[in-house]
Image (cartoon, rainbow, N blue to C red; front, side):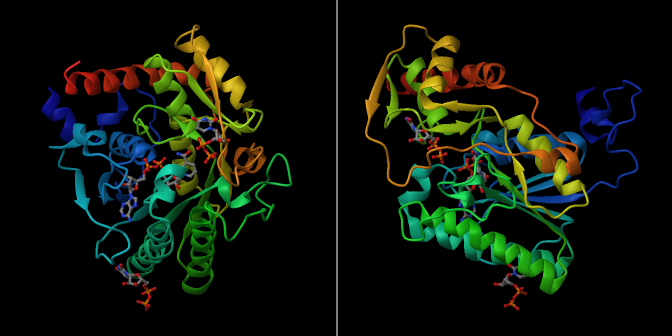
Length: 343
Ligand code: NAD
Ligand code: UDP
Ligand code: UDP
């Protein structure tokens, strides 16, 4: 029955007779900060499927209970409302530290809070990892490369970041978080991992978070014009969320500190992205040009040779296959919104 399968340690084996990845591995207790957010909630799904105990720490700034509600009632799942800027005492084996708003609209909303989250939040989680001997993984970002002068970006590139701009709270915050992580590693022997994540999309992204994929998909569904900022010739590389989750887990379980670029090397201009969204959702969608935001990086594309070689990881889902996978989720939420308004 369903009840038995929930409590069985063999739950994720699927009875296929294949040797599962978790064999011989003791069940771990894992904290995911920011676990009610977009990426975090997909990671939580996979960790629970693997058979681990998961504690989510989230202050619900950009995350939602809806994203993890399907685990309520699972004794291996706990949800704690907590702000990582404050210290916390827990006993766990691994810490996936994701807590931080990721969309430019969200992180610019209260830039000082964004810095506090990146610096104090990361310090607290590293202090926790040090005290209990837990493994710590930081989700850093491709933004540490700023408006890059090297293309594609390798992990050896030190970046081209404006320290006093409107994106600095995030870019410099994450750079400091990386520094703290390496200093706890060198100074206190904490076992750490650093991921530099490139633009990621998928179900459960916030509807109106201002990121380009969520904007275009929501606009196409709502029959609004797709808003292209600037001339639309700037590029990004878009990774499907399931690929990222695989990469984060491979990094945590592997032997290497990093930093590792985790992203999909497929590079698209914003105009090309708009075309793919039109093909996927509505070929009659129109484009509206808007002024671009300050300090917008002109191009971005990961060199992932290091992750391929040392983590045996590479993304599997190209944009044209991944985009359709988020459309049903967006349609449902937009429909519910409309019903809520009495339309
Ligand atoms: P998200 O905004 O959906 O999730 C962030 C989560 O952290 C939310 O649930 C939010 O409520 C929580 N949070 C924020 N501040 C907090 C605080 N002070 N205390 C406790 N919880 C807090 O963003 P996401 O896309 O899921 O990103 C997750 C992580 O990955 C972030 O650290 C982000 O910087 C990094 N990242 C994401 C991308 C991407 O494209 N999605 C790219 C690069 C890096
Ligand atoms: N910390 C925490 N939980 C713990 C251990 C530490 O939140 O279990 C916090 C602690 O409050 C401090 C930070 O992590 O703000 C850094 O801790 P560390 O022990 O490295 O530094 P110290 O407290 O000695 O300055
Ligand atoms: N962008 C756009 N239309 C939108 C939102 C964003 O053309 O409605 C552009 C934005 O100017 C940037 C790119 O898309 O060049 C990616 O922006 P996003 O905020 O998604 O991510 P980030 O800038 O952090 O890579």
